[in-house]
Each structure stands twice: as structure tokens, then as C-alpha cells.
Image (cartoon, rainbow, N blue to C red):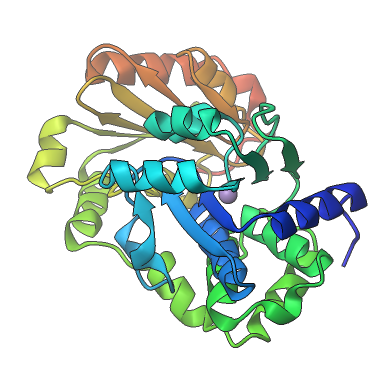
Length: 348
Ligand code: MN
């Protein structure tokens, strides 16, 4: 395994953990497998080392992660405000996982930022804000969970990692890499995978629960979106899916139900970019994905949004139809970015 971690950081983290008795671990709003996996995995390890460790999340983690050991003890700020405040006030160390700026914690941000104890950030997003005493940031890492594993190994604590903590860490790696299909160029991550499997983790179960399980209505909504609301624009090799508030109501929409819809049109041979427009209560949410290095981030910037070159988003204020028309126009302006020769695209 490549030695990527800086010795100074590892020893500083080791010292902070040694000095701490009560640790709070926290993550971003709408936590995903990596956010929950990294905080819970590290919390379980710290408990094994005799510390009091608690995970505090800004809002509710998804049900799909309820199979994780320790999930039921997570303190959710939107549900147990006073309890979360007490945990943070009593903590002598706060570990911030899987986010790069306090605003990613929504209403929990002030409580964490104003806490008097020391803080460490462990994250893999680009350009983190200096918001902790110790900043451990590796944007090249597949997931925060991979980074946490490497830190645990570098601290000589691999032997203390049990199957429960390992299951949490593997879950974050599985979800952030979509079961090792993206962000997994570095061969090291397979070595990390092997060392987690050595602990007895059930990877099939992790994949099934964290990636391949959804609600009845979520599946129906995606099927409806693809069947009825998908449009393909040949000249720009773009796909657009629009879902109105009425559509969402009809399918008993709950937050997270349209996760992944935007990726589906990219499965069509010859489609280069995909835009998913969803009518929320206060705006139209645009999510965009692409292949072949097509810059959907630049398309989204036109709407005041942004993101990664091939995974971006924006918010539009206006009607769904206006948004649709403007996205169609905007993406057409980027034709010069399409691969040449243009790929074959057959839709009839
Ligand atoms: Mn992550």
C-alpha cells in the first residue's frame, strides 16, 4: 500500500485521540454510506479502546443503512436537539467526517463550530475550509472510509478493528465507489478491501442493503421517469428527465427516492450528458452527469450552480418548463465539447 499519509498528521491524530475521553463524530446533512460508515466505524473502534464515542448527525440517516451495527444509537440533531447539544458540550474532541465546509452541516454547523473542544476533520472533498484544529484532507481518496482505514492502520490499531467497525468502513467504500465501479483507479483500495474482508465482513449483504435496496414507490417513480419523462436530444447527445411536483405526489415521493435517476440515461449508447430536473417546493433542482469528460459543471454554472466536471447540479427559480428549455439551450452551446467523431445514438 502506498504511503500517502503524512507522519505528522498521523501522530497528531494519535495524540488527540489518546488525550480524549468523550468523542463526538459528525458528518454532513443527508448523510450517505460514507458519512455514516466513517463516523460509526471510527466510533465503534474508539468504544473498543475504552472511550465514550457518539455519532451526531445533522438529520436522519437513510433507512437503507439501518443494518449497520450501532445505527440505532446515532443521535440525530433534528430529532433530539437537547441530547445532541449535551453530547457536543461534554465532548473533549470532535471528529468531522466526509465534509469540507461547515455549511454542509446545515443547522448543526453553529453548534459544532462554536464548541470549545479540539476538532479534527477527516475528508476527501476538494478544497476544504479551515474549520478544524487538525485538517486531514485527501481529495484523491475513494472515500472518507478508506482514509479512516488508512489512519487506523497507520496508528497501529488494525488489530483493534472488529467485524462491526470494519463493516461500517467497507459500507462507505462500497457506496462511494458504487461497488468499486467509480473512483477506484488506485490499486491500494483493493488491498484495503482485502484487509476489511479479513475481518469477516459480508460484502454481498453490504452491497444489497446499501446500494440495491429501495422502496416500492421509488422504483415505480424511476420506471415512470424513464418510460414517460425521458427526452433525448440527438444533436447535443443529451438526455433530459423532468419530474413535476404532481408526478412526485403521484408516486408518494420521499427524499432520496430519485437518487440515481440522473445516471440511468447515460447507460444508453451514445448519450453523453444527462440532466434530471425535479420540481421542489421552492425551486427546480437540476442534477447533471456526463461521460467522456463532457463539462456538465459548466452547463450548471450558467444556472449559478457547479460541481465536478462530470457530476454537477444547480437550482433554478422559475417554472419547470422554463428550466427545461433553458437547459436544452445551454447544453447545445457546448457541442464543441462532444467527443469526435460523434458516437452512434439510436432511439428508434
Ligand atoms: Mn464520501
